[in-house]
Every structure is written in structure tokens, then in C-alpha cells.
Length: 244
Image (tube, rainbow, N blue to C red; front, side, top):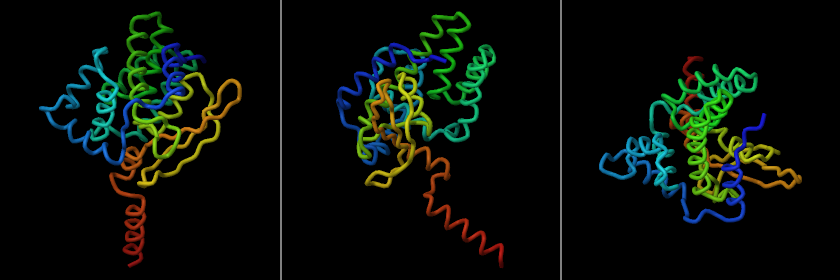
């Protein structure tokens, strides 16, 4: 099933030729930006950015879209591992040719999870199959916005310049959405201890490109904001208490 668009392939092709024009440092900038998204007086206030995003505002900059993604990580609805099941269901419905069901499921998901990369991409695809070209183009524009913000956040070619990915599978979606194949997959950490998704992007010619995606915020959400070490210590305490 071919879902890559010329827009996305063009964006990814340009990305491979050059690094991000401005430097985003996750460890240094994430918390600063997150604080601004909570400030109603800031231009980066989450509600303001989301309204512009959903209006497909062409003046939205890549830093602003990245700020929007960061702002969403603090919302109660941000459950990146829980939502994977629904995103996969939408993909399967499209793959099975059930485009109306895929559309309806995606619309419901996006009401509470408006920045789902795969949700938006699959919705665009279902629109195209339902002969709603304008809606398909609009939704694909939103996908391209998220993709451009990810590319802005880092060149993805090293652990220290990893791309920001809102969801744990978004790195995979970015690669396959660009018409490339996935090679080996693994995980690691940068020098600051941030959790990374490590993926190989494989070109049609067989060239392999190692890519890094920062998903520290998603992992923390899975552990309810606690480190893996803290979670293991809590489990050990529970086991000890149960024995007593």
C-alpha cells in the first residue's frame, strides 16, 4: 500500500542533504519550551499553537510546531504507548480496504490525540480513497508540518543530534512515509541519559542510514514520570512488603 507523498519525499530528501538550520538541544531546551507552552501570555501557548495547526496556518514555523508537540507531552491525553493500539487498528482498516471505518476511527482518535502522526497520515489516506481530495490534502499538510518539525529538531544522524519524536513509533512512520524501508531497530541513550529509538533507513539502492530519535518524554510517560531505576526499586519494595 503506497502512502508516501511527493511532499514528504521532498522534505526527507532535503533533510538528508543538510542538517537542521537551527540547533535544538533536547536536554537544555525541552523544559524551557514546555514552560512557555503553559503560559497563556506566550506566543508558544499550547492552545494558540494547536488552533493555528488545525487551521493549517501556513505561517507556523518549524520551531512553533516543535513547541506544539512538546506542549502536548504534558497533556493528560498524551499516552503514547496506549494509543499505539488504535493507530495500528486504523492502519489495518485502511490496509483491508475498510476506508470509512478507518476514517471514523481516526477522527475519534484525533479529537483527543490531535498530533498523532500515524492517525493523521492514515486519515489522509482514507480521505483519498473516499474521493475527498481536499480533505486528504489538508490532512497531509498537517503530517508534513509534524515531519518538518521533527527534522528541525535534529539531523538524526547521531545520538546527540537525535530527532524529536512525539510517539515511540513516529521515527518508523517518518522513514516509511518517505518511501524508505526499515532495517535494523534498537534503542540506546545519549550522553545525558535520554532514551533513543535507533533505526536504520534503507534506500531503494540498499544504502543504510542510521537514524536516532529522542523519545525520552514518551518513556517517562510510560513510567509515569519516573525513571526505570525508580520503578524497579518500587517493585522490589512491593515484593518485600508482600513477603512480610
